[in-house]
Length: 88
Ligand SMILES: [Zn+2]
Image (cartoon, rainbow, N blue to C red; front, top):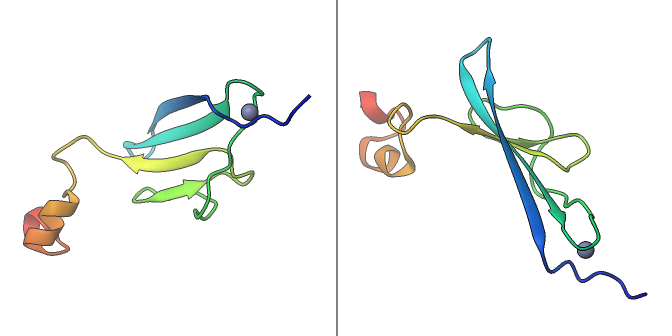
């Protein structure tokens, strides 16, 4: 038996609406479909950030803040209008 080279993947994305804040989070998990090994997200701090990206304490679920288009300034709009976005 040889080690799996991890060549095919399953990605699961769940979108959660946070009832208390009305904000949205994308919860992402990725695994190898051949051996089932879950993949760990790198370079993210653990916890929850309603304006950014964090990872679960086991590293296996990325939690990324999302918003409907037009309700938060895009990177381009921030570039053009400054950090305040729409209000600048
Ligand atoms: Zn594999």
